Structure formats: C-alpha cells, structure tokens
Image (cartoon, rainbow, N blue to C red; front, side):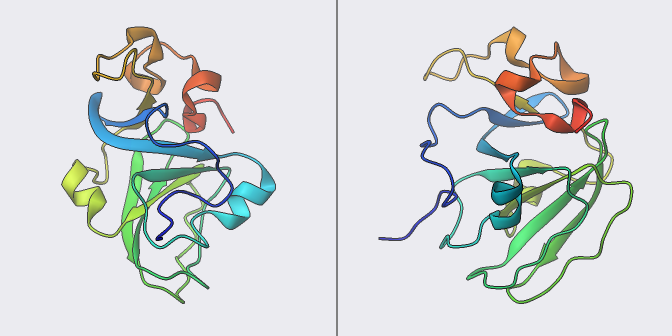
Length: 158
C-alpha cells in the first residue's frame, strides 16, 4: 500500500490545518516538521503526498532517496513566498538565504493551489469536518496568531 503521509507522523489528514494562500483556504492538509529528525526526514519514505509538509528553520532541501518529484516553496519569515521550484529525485535545491521555512508538496500542486512568488502562505485550523473556518485559527499576516496550534512557524520567528 502506498504511503502518502510523512513517515514521522501518525496523524491522518482530517484533523490537520489546511494551507491558506493569501488568506484563501485550500483543501491541502499541512503537516509541520519541527524537530531536527522531522526536518531531516521531510517526505523521505513516502510514495506521494496528500497535502504539504511545512519544514521550519529551513532554507534548502534535497531529494536524495525520494521516489517522486516535488514542488519546493521557499518562504520568508513573514509568510511571503520567495520562490517556487520543482525538484526531481536525486537533486539538490538551491539554498535561499532569506527563507525561514520550506513547504514541500507534490509536483504541480503549488500551481494548482495558486502558490507563486509574492503570495502569503499560512495554516488554518478548521472548526469542523465540514470545512468551516475557525477565525481564531488563522495564522500569520492573514489573521490572529495561534501558531502553536496551527503550525505556521514562519510567522512565529522560527
């Protein structure tokens, strides 16, 4: 059976925050890699991803040992997207010194979600499974910060 969630996470997609682009909530669940081990592992060991992984305190990534290509989104501390770059298995992404975090997602997913340089990314905690947004769950420049609960560490200063 293909693995489409990070190997370090036991959390399914339904209770996770959703990625927001310029305040507009997408249907992409977001896992946040905070620990050194989680950040180092990222998407290794997966066969695809049903969402995105927000890697804190990160300015470059590699795809050594990856099984599929990804989009790498480099994010400033403010949540602003600095660059979006495709990365193939076995390749190394260019370091982005201004990046405070990186979001990894399946190749092509960034474009489908409207992620482009200049956009602002954040995480949103949904109030219920039907998809209603909890206004207190907005993080970053798009709303009130409850970042520990929501996982948007780029605006927390990590």
